[in-house]
Length: 428
Image 1 (cartoon, rainbow, N blue to C red):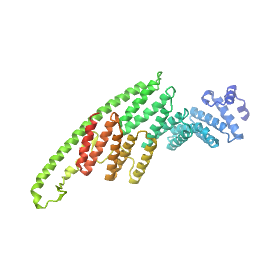
Image 2 (tube, rainbow, N blue to C red; image 1 turned 60 degrees about the horizontal axis):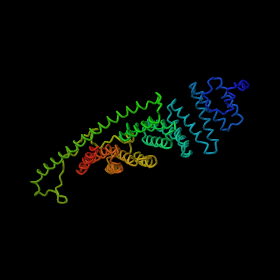
Image 3 (cartoon, helix red, strand yellow; image 1 turned 180 degrees about the vertical axis):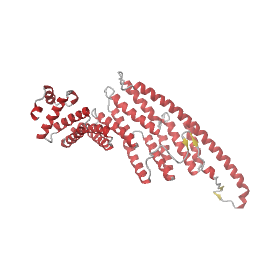
Image 4 (tube, helix red, strand yellow; image 1 turned 135 degrees about the vertical axis):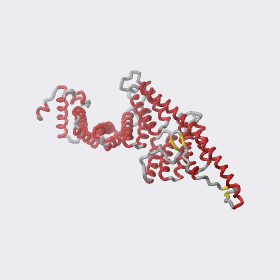
C-alpha cells in the first residue's frame, strides 16, 4: 500500500511540489486519496511540521465535503489546531485561526453543536486581534460577524447581535469601494441590521439595512441571481413604508389616549374636590396647604391603551429570557460594557440600557429601575439629531416609559411629559 501511494500521477506530483492548498482541483477521488496518503507519511517523520499538518487538514476537509464523512472533518480540525500550536510567530497565525474557525463552523452546520460555533467565534476573534488594520482584516471581521449573527439566532443574546453589527461595520470601513468583496461585507451588515430591526423594531436599523444593500447594489453592476439586491431592496423599502405607517398610527393613537386620560383625570379630580369641600371644617388633612386627594382604586389601576398594546408596567422590548434579579444585574453590567466596546452610536446604547432596566422593572417593580430607564431614553433622545429618522421611535419609547411611570406612581407630570413626547413624535 505504501508503494502504491508513492506511485502517484503527474498531476498529484505537481500539486504537491507547488504546495497547492485548493484541494477541489483534484477532481479524481484517487488523486485526493494519494495526496492524503502523501501528507500522512510526511507527518510520521515530522509530526510537528505546520506545513504538512495544514495540508493534510485541507485534504481531509475536502474529502469530508465530498463524502459527508464527519470523522474526516474532525480530523481536519485536529490538524488545524496542531498547526496553530506549532506556529510560534503570532503574525503567521491569523490564516490558520481563520481556517480552523471555518472548519468548526462547517461542523456546527452538520451537528448543530453550539460549542463548535462558539469555538469558531473565539478563533475568529483571535485572528482579528492578531491582524493589523489593513486589507487582511476584513475577511476575519466578516466571518466573525456572520458567526455571531448565527449564534444570536440560536441563543437570542442581544450582545451577540450588537457585536455582529460592529464587526460587519468595521469590515466595510476597512475595505475600499473597488474591492470585489465589499458588496459581500455590505450584505452581511445589512442582514444584521435587518435582524435587529425585527427584534427591537428600531426604525434606524431598517434605514441602515436599506443603505447597506443600496451601496452593495451600486458596487455590483453585474449582479448574479444569487445576490438579487434589487429584489431585496424593494422588499425592505416596502417594509419601511409599512413600518412608517404603523409608527404614525401608533403615535396618533397614543397621543389621543394619553390626552383622554389626562382629561378624565382632571374631571375626576374636580369631582373629588367637590365631594371633599363640605368636609374641610371637619379636620380634613392638608399637606403643604393643599388638600391631599386620594384617587379611586379604579383610576389608580387603569390600563391605558397605546397602539402597541397597553401602558402597563410589563415591558416587552428587553431581554425576556432573564428571570432573577442577580442575573439581570449582571446582564445590565455586561450590556454597558458591550455598548462601550462595540456600539458605535452612543444614543442607541442608551436605548439598550433603558430596555434592560424596563424589563427588570416589570419583574421587580422597583421605581429606581423605571427612573433609570426614563433617564436612559431621555439621553438617547438628546443625543439623536432632529433630522434622524430614529428620533420618532425614540420619542415614542420615552413616551411609553413615562406613561408606565404615570400608571405606577400616579404622577401627573409623567402624564404631561408623555403627552409632550408624543406630540414631538407627530412632527416626523
